[in-house]
Amino acid sequence: MSLEKLLAWIPPGHPDEALARQVAFDRLPAHIAVIMDGNGRWAAQRRLPRVEGHRNGIQAVRDTVETAARLGCRVLTLYAFSVENWKRPAAEVRTLMTLLKRYLRLEIETLLRNDIRFRVIGRAEDLSADVRRELDSAVARTADSHGMLFNIALNYGGRAEIVDAARRAVSEGIAAEELDERRFAGLLYTAGQPDPDLLIRTSGEMRVSNFLLWQIAYAEIYVTETLWPDFRRRHLLEAVLAYQKRERRYGGITSSHAAVAT
Ligand code: FPP
Image 1 (cartoon, rainbow, N blue to C red):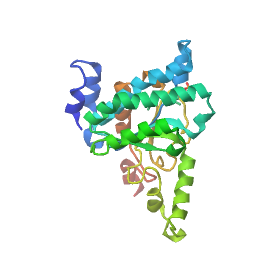
Image 2 (cartoon, rainbow, N blue to C red):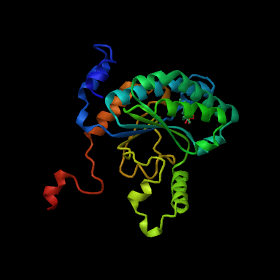
Image 3 (cartoon, rainbow, N blue to C red):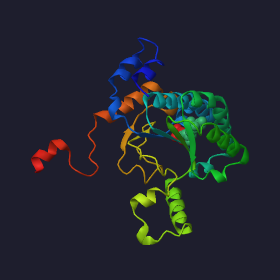
């Protein structure tokens, strides 16, 4: 979208307006991926049960999705539930699934209004039937949207994704010599999507936690101390502005060094 779409959503004079005006809309990250972390710590700081952190994380999801769509980001991927998250107490897993279903039911109109297409990446087949029904409905209802693609990573693992892609290659009878990086990328859950340019992680942790391992090969990593339930439009704009200040090298040399090197 654009500066106008973003400003239309920011009350005049609000501090976020100045941030929005600094964004270079011709150099937006095409794909932003987010590791939402710190819900448990947010709750612990308030002496609340962990699930309250997840509950309060929903407003951060809403803000992030709408900000990214209004900015004009092509793809947003949120890491909502990893293959390892099944190890959490059953009650916490149940709450996460309930929150997800509620989010989808309540937010579908916002997704449609913002022309957002919703997709799931991960082993969705292992999720319970009621969750899959809700996910399938949101995917179907937003199928004709042409704006931002919103991937939710559920029962997702980067290594599992690579194994699934290798299995697909075998089951589709692709010969070893036919496989190259481009072909392999087309077998991943994110086939056809641009790789993340910007990977955001909240709560100060310096790990990639098995997230989009193939796709983040050249992503810029931005870690903020902000805990996920506190993450808002301002924090996403700050991350985009920090990204735009960096010089990306893709393993080469920067243009400023090129003159010296040649
Ligand atoms: C990490 O915090 C967060 C998660 C494992 C789940 C994120 C889920 C939500 C924000 C709610 C549902 C999502 C959607 C998209 C509707 P943590 O529990 O690991 O925090 P900690 O490291 O402080 O313990």
